[in-house]
Image 1 (cartoon, rainbow, N blue to C red):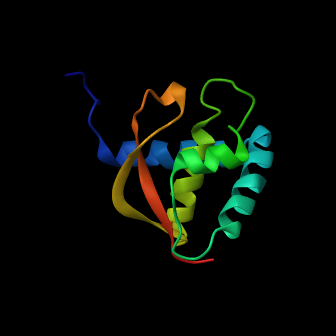
Image 2 (image 1 turned 45 degrees about the horizontal axis):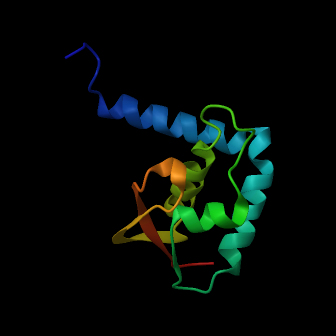
Length: 111
């Protein structure tokens, strides 16, 4: 084990820092706008996954490393603001690049 490898508080600080950077990235402005259109077009109590969001919005950013982090940042922000909640269900991703990894399913609870 390396020194400093485990530090929950530092990990949370870096998470928040990265989310703020992803949200504020100029190349993600169009993604954030489209994500809000997607979300507010959903009926209350609808369930959806990151695949559904990306299918509607396209991938954020300019394709550079980490530009797709805005997707996770968007979900974190919407959860923190109380607009969505996890259903407890996991759904296999259909996106090829995700290698059939699992996506958390979310439910719209406000907005």
